[in-house]
Length: 499
Image 1 (cartoon, rainbow, N blue to C red):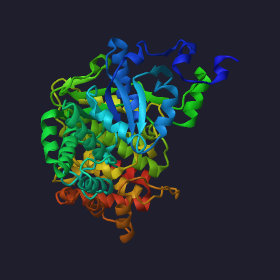
Image 2: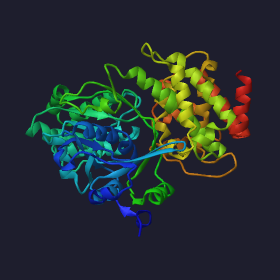
Image 3: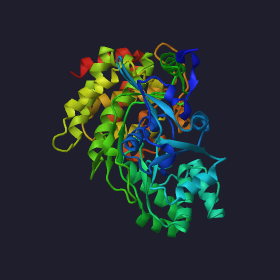
Image 4: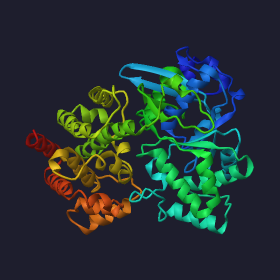
C-alpha cells in the first residue's frame, strides 16, 4: 500500500514518511520547556500564534513551547493529544498550496477534568505568557462601561464562588481561571508574566487589564494590587483568515498527501501580527516570523477592525441575506464589490495612521484577500456573535452629524438587523448564533419592524444610540427597504442614490 492510500495518522514517528514537500519541525520538541499557556486552542490560534512560535523554535529553539487550554470543549484535546500536539498547517492562495507540520503545541488541557493542571500551569514559574483567543464574548466585559460584566451568567457564578471559596478550584469563565491561576502564582513563585489578548477586540490588552483587575478587586484586593505591578497587558492586532475546517478539506489533505490529520488547519498565505512590546517576563522573537513590535498598536487596530473586520461583517450579513455561502462569492458580485469600496471610503478619513502606512494599498490588498477562491471562508461563520462585534467594527467609525457621511455603515447595520429575522431573501430560514440572541429576538417579537436603536439598546449600547439618532433613522429606512425589496434591490438602489 503506498502512502497516498494508507492515510497515516500524524505522529512524530511517521513524519519521516511524509512527502518531501511537507515542512516539519527541525528542533527537538522534548527539549523545549513550556513558556506559553494559550487559552482557546482553536483553528485561529493554530493558524496564527502557534505558527509564529513554531517559526521561532525552528530558528532558535528555546523554552517557548505552548500548552493549549480549552475551557468549553474537549474537541481540540481529542484531535491533538493522540498525535502529540502535531498538526498540519495548509496555506492557500489561489492554486498555490503549501503544507507544514507545526510542533509548537506540546499538549492540550481541557476543563473541567484538567482544571487543577490548568491552574498549576498558569502559576508555573516557567510560564512567561498567557495568551488568549476566546472571541469577543469570552472576556466578560460590559460594552457600556468597558468594565466587568457582573450580570453575565458565568461571571456572576464565578464571583459568587470566589466569595464563598476565596481560593476556588472550579472556576467557569476564562477570567475565573486567570484569577484562580494568578492567586496561585502570587502565593508560590511571585514572578510576573504577560497576559496577551489575540482577539478582535478594541484595545484588547487594555480591555483585558480592566476586566481582570476589576474581577480581582472584587474577590481579592491584594491580588489586584499584585497584578498591577507584576502583570503586563500589551495590545495586539492579529490578522489571518482561518475558515472553519470542513470534511472536504481534510479529505483533500489525505488524498493529496496521504496524511490523516483531524487537527489540520487551512489558512490564507497572508498573516500579520502587530504587538506592543511590553512583556514583563520576556517573549519569543516573533519578529523572525514577521511580527511587528510597536509602542502603540491603536492605529493599526482601528484600521484592521474597521476596514477588514468591518467589511467582513457587511459581507456576512448582506451576503447571507442574498444567499451567498462564501466571502469570495460575495465580492465577485459587482454590486457588493462597489458597496465594499463605498464602505471603505467612509472609514479611511476616520483613521490616523503612522507616516508611511498606505491605506489605499491596504484596501486593495484586502479586496484581493476577500476574493481568494481557495479559502472558502463561510459567511455564516463570520456572522456569528454580531452583538459582540458591531460596536468596534462599525459604530466606532460613525460620528454624530449628517448621517449621509456614513450611509454605507447604516446599510450594513440594517443588514445585521434584517439578518436577525432569520430569513433570507428567498425565504430560506436559519438560526442565529449570538450570546445575546434572546434579548435581540425579544425586541423583534415586540415590533413588526423593530427600530434598530432598540436592538442596540437591548445589548447595552445606549451610550452610542443616544448620540447617533440621525444615523439610526437612516439605518431604519434601509431596514424597511431590505424587508420590502430584498438585499440585491436595496444595494442597487443605494448605489444609485449615493453616487
